[in-house]
Length: 136
Image 1 (cartoon, helix red, strand yellow):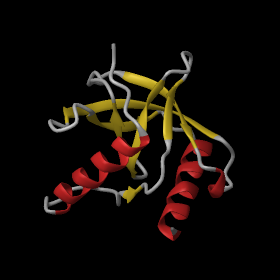
Image 2 (cartoon, rainbow, N blue to C red; image 1 turned 120 degrees about the vertical axis):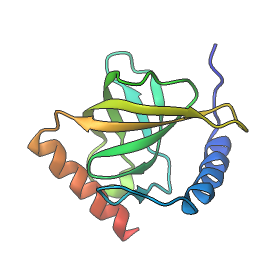
Image 3 (cartoon, rainbow, N blue to C red; image 1 turned 180 degrees about the vertical axis):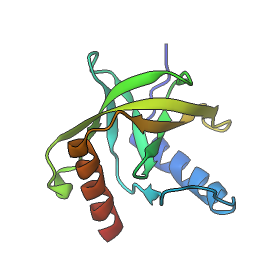
């Protein structure tokens, strides 16, 4: 059985992890945008909650999950977009898990997912999402 992470736990874990990462030197190709509200990720097909987005770029995102996500595995995911973004309800995309590590304090996991096989429409939706996050 997997541990269920509450909204309070998610916010607390993300704040702690964000502070730790600010001190790390980043070597990224694309700017990351912190997500300051809950963007739920749902596995297509099962409807199971996969996790929540912590930050996102034009090529991938970091997710907070309550279970280990297998690396090198591909997933079709639905991102539950907040109504305030006025972009529709869901963004469906394919992603490959490139790393997973456990948060020792909470037992939750962080996973880095790279978006794959992105269509032009999906890329445009992601770009719109990033513009809206940049404005917040």
